[in-house]
Amino acid sequence: MKDATVADFHANFKTKTSLKTWGAEMVDLIKRYRKKVQNYLYKEEDEPTVTFSQWDNQMRCLLDIYNQSGEDSDYAAFQAEIDDRDHADHVFEQVYAYVPKDMMTVDSVHDFVCYRALLEAYEVECGRLSGYSLKHTDKLVWSCNTLSEEQIAELFYLFG
Image (tube, rainbow, N blue to C red; front, side):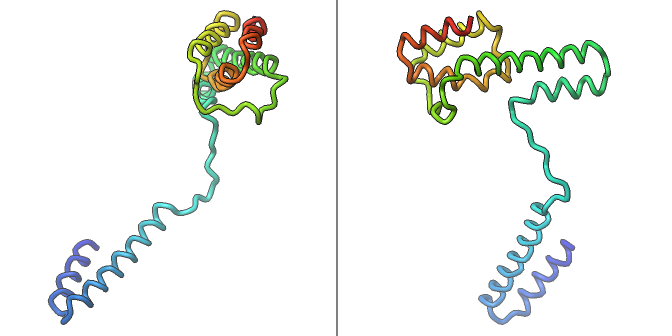
């Protein structure tokens, strides 16, 4: 097909009386090929694409490892991830139960000292932040940006 297109190009160039007419035909030809390429590349899939949250990567990897091996140790690692997720969700739901979710909007950290202190308090009392529990750190940022010092001090107690 490539050779035929090149041959057609040379033939049209030699026989056309007007370069302007030939140029217009070439533009039309390019538009048609571009449309064919776009239709090929971006065609609708027969099956819907499965998507999942970035917070689920570790869990999905551990599940895949267990499904391939069937080993008890791999299942234990998968179950530990589930338990860690449940624990993180429970802690943050308890601590921030009184705050409406739509009120906790965050654009950036304004008080890094407070933020680091809350991260450390969580890790001391609840264990290391995992890839999944990082999804809750926006609540810590919101706390540092909006709460008073007394309310932030209460958070240290609530994590314990």
